[in-house]
Image (spheres, one colour):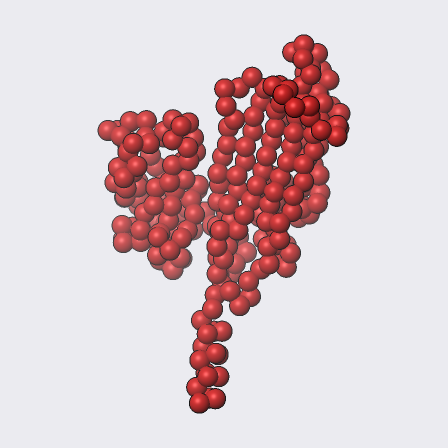
Amino acid sequence: MKRTIFLSFLMLIIASPLVNAYTFEKYEGERAYYLPIFSQDLGQDTYERNGYSVEFPTNAPVSLKKAIIKHLFDYNGTSLEYATKEFLQCSAFDETPRLVSSIPEGNRYVSYNWVSGSLIAQSSNLIVYKSFLENYSAGAAHPMYVEAYLNYYIPTKKELKLADLFIMSKKSAINRAIRKNARKVSDALYNPNDLSGITCHDDFYLSPKGITFIYQPYEIGPFAAGVIEITVSKAQLTGCLTALGKKLIK
């Protein structure tokens, strides 16, 4: 009996993809600035706010930390502290902002930059990480935002690109599979009768459903449609996958 319990426990450990999982902790920060020159040009006090809320691995290799920082802040360093400091101090306008304790309520000329990042999934060989970047500039009709995914392959310590998963000479077949599935979200598209502009690219993430391609607001649909996702299964990609693609795409 004891032997059976021990073997069952051992098999559970071996089968678990998260035995050596990285620990992700949340880090947050925000700063508010007064923009003197821009305020003078507009004739009204103008402020800018920069903030972030990201999950970051504390026990991961430098390569993963660097990939996430690059993914979030487009900065090549490996220190989250330095990258976020640079981000908080940057201004969307060509002037030196002045740090303030808070932005007065009701001020309509507020610009902001916001970054968030979160772990979506991790296994013994793959990390899927999502970032959300939003920007609003004074006077714009609405903020603009981008969702992006980092697919980090642990064995090679690198971010996965399309060419890692697909035989690129089969690109036309891949596009056909995407366009076929695009009909499922036809209500969100600019022109559901012409799908020729929908192609495969490096904005994607891997999940148990297959590979999901991401299209940002205005890319293939109006802003009101938001980020559009089109998922393609492994069965639809027969003959298009590399050996690694066959291993990772379900």
